[in-house]
Length: 137
Image 1 (tube, rainbow, N blue to C red):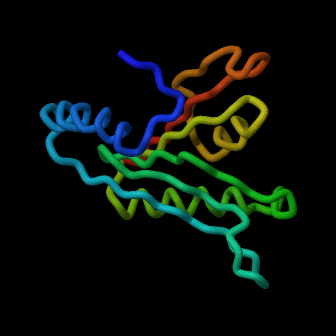
Image 2: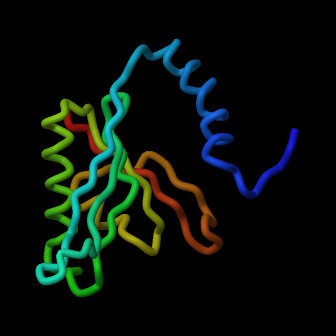
């Protein structure tokens, strides 16, 4: 055994390989896709925020949702989430899941019809990490 704080891509792949093989033996082949819904500056076309997710095992996982301060409270987050939901439905997903911190947006996701299925208290200290899902079928 060896502890490393600088795991190479090759070492990471060596860890993933047997786990993927084990999962495959229990689930069969499942597709895997990444998806980004990008917010671009209208002048520079630079990406200034957006949504990044993964689709696998028939679910969409929203890993990141980032909206610049200048675009907050204008419905941008709702439009991004609606676009993600439409894409998940198009891909035949059973649902969408995500996590967020108590100081971020748990109320926002509840408003969009997500239900909490768990949380971790004091992560980070003094806050909570919330896990949400929304079934589409």
